[in-house]
Image (cartoon, rainbow, N blue to C red; front, side, top):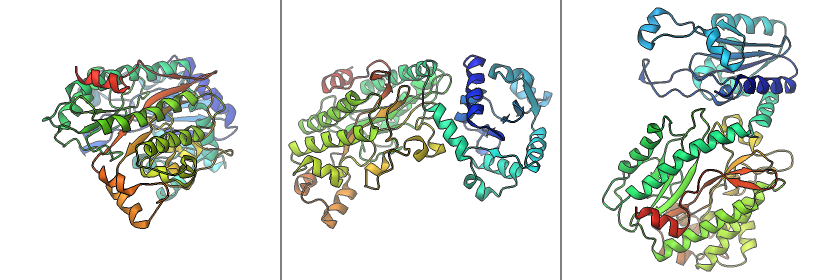
Length: 462
């Protein structure tokens, strides 16, 4: 955990924003795999971690703004529990590192909430993504479970986003600890990958790197020769000469801050001519986007610039034609680049996605596009110091999308379908880095992971 003063100050800032009522933070419970006692690895709710830092199950935190009270509700373990778990500190002692002075048994929580609701005080809570916490809130609030996420506090969402969006120095250090692990994960995968072995052999070793560093993956690892499947989690393909591999992976720091890195590289260790050419298009989109990043720049504009770099590069290779600006304005580039450039990153790998992307990545100055591809941009608003974003352009050959657009006669002024169809089976390329916006520009976080064609080929050679 950080020092108690960090959590005390975060809660003080939150109370200054939420002027009255109760603020409820349900912590996460253990999640069974196939029966109650056999659980998945525990992961605490990120907003709970941000304000309280306590990383174990069975907790709910309450901030009573009107009476300036902060209370942790939880279990007091019995001897029956200790037989299985070992000695346990009293709840009040466990709450101390969060700077919380009052700890009560869980049964007191319902009493406290009902008393407040009977006095017509407002109950603030965030959107819930776990069904057990939805049921808890139903019991506490009297709101039917189907209506829980329709009655969230927009005021609280905006207040939390306004704090969690800006990473402190301590938080950036945590992200860079995760990136140290990412470096080892990526360089190991490049050395291990060879024709004739299965993807799961490398994917397992990559996840093992995180586990061996007292860490866990920040999301399920994407490692596949089917690069065109953006979030493909299967690792069952046999690596073949001529294949490209994508590794999109991340780790968590000790305090659960995430890294998220993508590299694409050849199974054979050497790019073919067309692989090198398309890789360099994506590389230019990545590096030019990063160079643009500084306070006051809309990330939407960074995304659109990277789209133009991709469209221009694909035009030079004969896959696109016509005016680049017109092609991007029309959305023709999205045949190859059908997703957003990046997302915020912090305690969540898609930071605060559970609170709603339109609160996190958009505001009154920039609204979400309805155009295919750009509509998937998770963050579009102005960059400010302290914001950490991924930059992850890509070029993909998706047979189903190519076939559909050609059959619809879409963008024939901009897309050379004959040339594109000659290269169906290419799969794709994605390159991703994690970037901090600073007072006067930006900083690429973590030590450099091989990224140029030459660096990647050298790393693949072992």
